[in-house]
Length: 321
Image 1 (cartoon, one colour):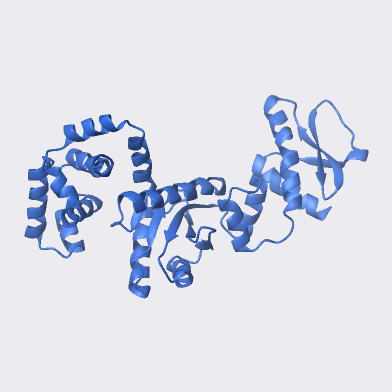
Image 2 (cartoon, rainbow, N blue to C red; image 1 turned 135 degrees about the vertical axis):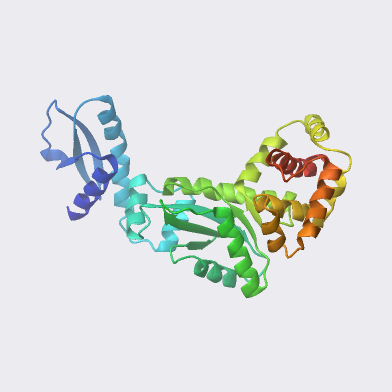
């Protein structure tokens, strides 16, 4: 009964209600409670929730599956085994809560990164785990990639792209390996982690197809590209011609100019910061920004034009063929 008591307490925390449990053959029922039947470790029980309203009935309908899940997962899972289940979308909310508490992440947010490395996978995995503050989990995946879950407190301000960029630079400096990283959105619970992982994989695939020069690829660009890909080709070409000039092709085909523009956007349109991060003289950066404006008609020092340029940069690979 000790395991059942523990499972009951965990479920009470999740639903915020008291749960009374009796063996099925000993159960006594009344009209003031809503009852449900469940099996735990081969034994049949009856659970009771106070009240008979619709919400109580909904809880009663869901709880049997949660009790069954907790009973099935009483064996001890390693950290790797548990988080592998998390990313595959397995486990009931009660099971996830139980193990999240065990590994001290029940009150944390997270985001998922998908890493692709051309070599030294084992070493990259070790370094990736060391890069964080000890809460990161790095997993091998069946497709040969790595999945990294980064946990952080709900009050912390964490930028996933900045974290991934720092990780990519760290791996490059330590191992001389250029990794490609897809970045997923923040998951506010472990139930949302599989979606974060799928978005990270989508961003990684997008980067490999549309922007191989970049090492870090955000799910935000992936989603925007997917939206653009759903638009007929003729309409995409119309949008592109409306937003750009003929000289824009020269900018988008020039790796140095395109990188400059992207670094400027990433640096929040700050000339001094971008020049410093790219090790450029301020005058050199100003010359390049002037050339971009001359060829594309867009002054990316101005926010609205910067947004248009970003969209054009995503459009160009879709229309150039």
